Image 1 (cartoon, one colour):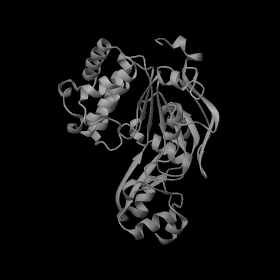
Image 2 (image 1 turned 30 degrees about the vertical axis):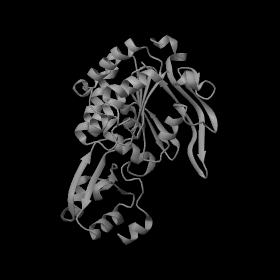
Image 3 (image 1 turned 180 degrees about the vertical axis):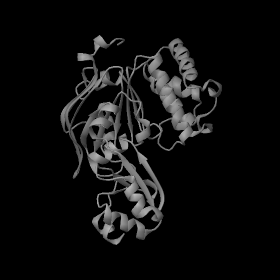
Image 4 (image 1 turned 30 degrees about the horizontal axis):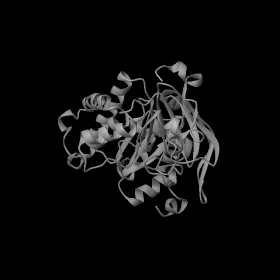
Length: 324
């Protein structure tokens, strides 16, 4: 497959009414989405939202209880082997063989996909150059840093020239610099190869450059669209305050009962036409350690749709509000 015409209606992925339950937990609830060929598509949601369950189904690892999923027009349940040949996958947990060298990991993957020896050698060199691992080609994987291992996993996923690349939380556990480099490599892949990229993440700041975003929470899709469209439809100005004490926190919650717990002891307050930062500063200024104002962002989109912060999934309970 080398052109969009080979995809039904130009879609790399089609999901129709997919549901999946694990015991009493409904992991996916009637999920439907369409991913155009050649785009970078992000599934954004907190841990446990259903992102990885959906990826497992699309990668033929899991089966839906109902509904269907198509990869380049191929039903993942009826034709799993044909679907897998279109896919490259980087799982959240590393699956590299740390006893093998970098080159051996890539070569073994090529053999699994029945690539000939000459093709494996050529493709291995191409992939090592792409992810800046040529100098470590003969190093054992166990000697690599976590960021280098993740880059190797991306290279391995692309060895057999798939049309669709799945990245399930590709930067989890990496420091900020390593995370930025991974996204640089993803951008380079788009420029060099005819790829559709599907990314799951709970890092809001990582998806602003994606073509489309699907916000998912508790197994349900809450909104879909481009970053700008989502901000326009659901975003709001967000005031972030860090109280100096538990007493100050209780006072702010009493004044703004819809405030949501954020990361690092922050409270997130969605600003309305009647609110102003000046008024909050006048009332609580000496009780605040820090205050900032964010213009409509994907963080405020998620807050508007779910009533909670993506990085701090549990909402502030009423008991917590009363007790400060």
